Length: 425
Image (cartoon, rainbow, N blue to C red; front, top):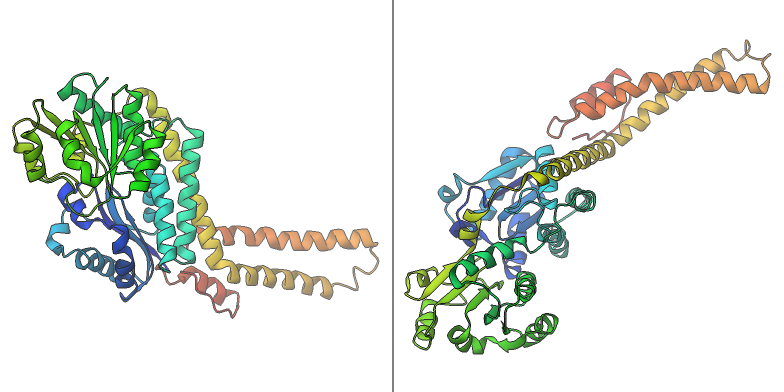
């Protein structure tokens, strides 16, 4: 069945809409059940990150699939269809592969080459498999996308700075605080982004770092790795009152730091407080930005500050795009070959049968040949047939597109008189 991707990303969607459509892990089981209940949809993988929310699916047709996936996005989050009209994008079959492979290679990220997305693409397939929502079509697609991502990182210098996004946020914080050396820092969360933030800030020479998390064990693990002190979220008020910089990067679906908590902390502070919110959905109530003595930096602000990559990365970006193109082409050929395999085998068998029949018809004339001569004639006859069939088979693979109802395959089977149950999508 054909493949369709539907979603929104940081390129056209405001951060507020990305937050509303974001899928937490607890949302996935229900979302996948809803998706697989849709008519015309047989497989689905949800990719939900800070920068994008999209669903890739195996569908019966473009129109049916588009409507089904749009229903999943809107109905699972109570978002109106009109809210999606402007930022929504769709990619069909080969374009869907182009898009996913570029995403896995870090070419469609706010920071070109960022490495988190490759793991997120892999994790999205794992979660879909756990919910029995992925099958052979999407599993093959996502594995191929993973290969493209690995090649892009192995064969170019992209992705050598995985903390680039956090680094830019830290730069913005330094503009407010001055040098970060010796500053007291609180990191709220203990996941991947929080770990990158703690490691990066430690490298910049900050002073005391306190890691706060709902899970005390997770806080201890991250604190041990970054020479920090672990705490539970119950110590958040004290951290807000004492830290110079608070970095929040949890996976919570609601606000972790609200305006009332900040107001209470400000009563106990004598210096400004800088909040760096790296979470989607946001951890920090945006209303705190209006409070005196508070500077809030969120993902939207970081996005606005992203500069064009330096010219020296242009060659690597071009090479990464070339790798994506190569891997998409490999996937397309393999996909079409799998779909056309029964017919191709039948065509080749028909050619071999025709050559063998002609050899048998001339058996009496060939009787005087030595065994080696006889083998040479048979090889020549079979080789001529194989060569004649090669170009039509290649053309068949190139022209067979999903949604074409296998028109070229059916015509070839009809012309050769081959009766085969061929389902070349």
